[in-house]
Image 1 (cartoon, helix red, strand yellow):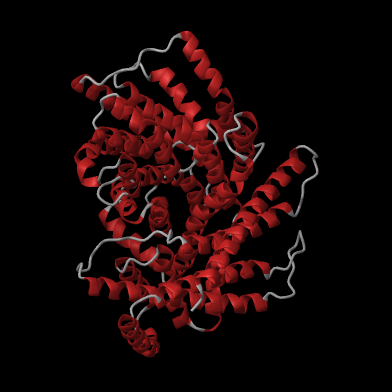
Image 2 (tube, rainbow, N blue to C red; image 1 turned 180 degrees about the vertical axis):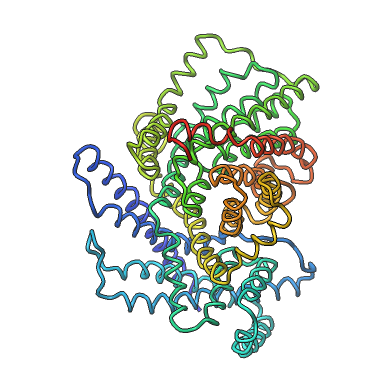
Length: 606
């Protein structure tokens, strides 16, 4: 068993590697932008270095997340609460987790060996560095999972070991007898109910199914894991997350909320209206719903309670605003959907503005009605001088979305390049202008952003193997035939999809739900005559609502934690606000031009 001191040193090394990978990503993309637009001499190898850095960031950061027990799980509490049953289920899940990491480790080692001697086309680095990043990361994850397993009580460990040996002995005949679809679906459900990390929920059934295919198919595991994250568009995920952390820490979010207070604080339900407007301003920069909840909760929950709002009402308002704000670009989910459906990220960003406006207006009208009913306080109307000072304080932060969306919409920069501009600009404001970020904090911010990014990237990677096998087994065609019998018109399909995505997002969170359902439902959208762009925006809106849907929505749990309350205490209040958002989503679903107007006007027919 690895000693505690050695384990801490290994984790520190993984953290340092994650920070270094994030720095490589930022510098390589920034260097490419500088050389292309300033020196007018493109760096042909900068994209390759950035993609390699992203692969290492995903898998090293995944190991750091493993050490922090941060990989998301679905806890349905389906099993009795008896300690013995809980321990046995956790032990079996840990065995499955360790087996998955062991399988990935062995196939990654094979792939490193096979790619010896290959070099990249531009930079000329060894291509074996790609699977090596996976090998190093999964080694760390496997050691940490094994360490957790060995901490179980000896009787439990012996019992689980005996069950595992019997299962492995019977695995060969079972793999031959069972259809691979059953292996994928059954393994997915069992691991999900067993509270396994979602990356294992996707990955272990895929590994078993590939084992059944045999031969060279097993090498598809590391290849698909690497290919799932080796995408230039996905570089926007860690970059936008880092930009959001820099803005949250550097005082930018505070200045934007101050501007919102000066603009709408005097309206009925002043601080509640400020929450909605502040979310629009901040979400248009952060790209992360979790960051939005953290910022709004920190700045506005205490203020609303001081002004006399009930705690439940304050949590509901923050939750609803964040659920709406996911539609305001930049949005990390839009980046992922663009890779799934082969859509333009720019078109998705543009398509999100007007639907976000529809939902925001619905919320503000509800707040106005409730404010009149309950006599909520208003803030004294800001004088012209106060408004001017608020505008002056927010001027530099407001230049950031202008820089980002201006460069994207004019075609001057890609979404990934605009994301690195957001990192550099927000970092400059926080460290040099406002001086609220000490330089020594930058590595920690890189680590936090890199770890959160790795959690999402690992799920994308492992889901890419799972969905490839589903496609190999013709599952999308089967699902399409079944759903077409239920909803064969565009409107019927859209309404059914709204219900499916809201429900699944509440259970599985946004990214896993999209990774499972997206590849299944996009072909059906095309068959029923629904625009893929319109469908994508509806998915994003439904995910936003699902993240705050009681009792499972992770966003609502975060908001309740920040307010020191519980989901049951706020459930009745928050459902009213989410109901308004659902009505707004139905309006957007049934009126497609709300989504398609801006992208068609600016980019041409979609």
